[in-house]
Image (cartoon, rainbow, N blue to C red; front, side, top):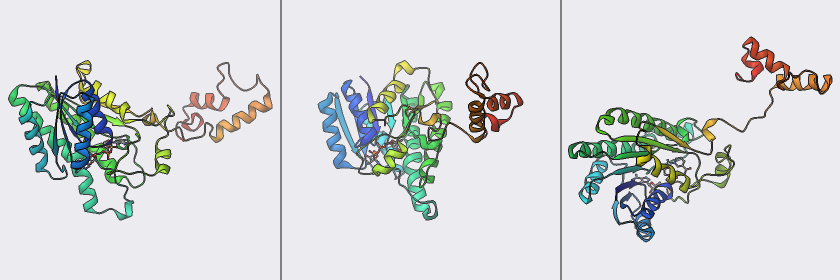
Length: 296
Ligand SMILES: NC(=O)c1ccc[n+]([C@@H]2O[C@H](COP(=O)([O-])OP(=O)(O)OC[C@H]3O[C@@H](n4cnc5c(N)ncnc54)[C@H](O)[C@@H]3O)[C@@H](O)[C@H]2O)c1
C-alpha cells in the first residue's frame, strides 16, 4: 500500500486522482484551501475504498505552508507519491495585469509545487526512500490564450522546474514528471469557465472533451512502477490538441490555384501519380515553404 499526498484534492482533477487511488485501496493525505469541499472529497474517497484519508486544509499561496504540509503528511507515514494539482487559472486581460495577480498565479501554480517537491525530496533522501512526483501542468505552457499571460507562464515555468528537479533527484531514484491536460470539464468553484469558452478551448483532433478520469489514469500510470524509467517527462493528455490546430482550412491560395488547374485539365491532369497537386510538389522540390504550406 502506498501513501499518496495530493494537493488541490477538493475539486476537479485532484479530486478524481484521489478517487482513483482510493479505488486501489491506497492511503491518502489530501490537501486544499477549501476545507469544506475537502471534507466532502475525503468522505467520497473513504467510500471509494481508501485505506485511510488524512485531510489537511492549507493555503499554498503562502510559502511556508508547503513545508508544513509535507511535514504533517510525512508524520502520518512516509510519502510515496506526491501529486501537485492545486492551481488557479484566472482570466486577466493583458492591459489589466498587475503584480498582485501575477504573483498569486506564480506562487500557487509554480512556487508551491516546487517547494513541496523540495520538502518531500529532502525527507526522502534522508530516509532513503524514492517517492514519485507528478505535477499537473497545462497545454497553456505551449500555447497561450487571451487573458492567460500569468497562467501560461506559470505552467511553462513549472514544467521546466520539474525537469530540473528530475535531473538532480534522479541519482536518488526520485522520479519527477508532469501530466499536461488539455481542456477538461470540471465543476470548479475556484476556476469557473463559461460554456462558450469551454466549447472553443475544448476542440481537439479526437473530437471529445477530456474528463478528469482521463487525467487521473495518466497520473496513476506515470507515477507508478510501469513508468519506472520515465523522469523529466511532460505527458500531454489532451486529445491531441498540442499536436497543432484543427481550426484552419485545408487549402492555401496556391493549393486552390492548383485545384483550379486540375479542374481545367480534367481528372488525369495536373496531379502526379501520388495525387500531390503540382504547386505543392514543385514547391517541395525547390524548397519553397509557401508552396508546401509549411511557412504559412
Ligand atoms: N480543467 C482543465 O481544463 C485543466 C487543464 C489544464 C490544466 N489544469 C490544471 O489542473 C489542476 C486542477 O485544476 P481543475 O481544473 O481540477 O480546477 P479545480 O478548481 O476544480 O481544482 C483546483 C483546486 O485547487 C485548489 N486551490 C486553489 N488555490 C489553492 C491554494 N492557494 N491552496 C490550496 N489549494 C488551492 C482549489 O480550491 C481547487 O479545489 C490545476 O493545476 C489546473 O491548472 C486544468
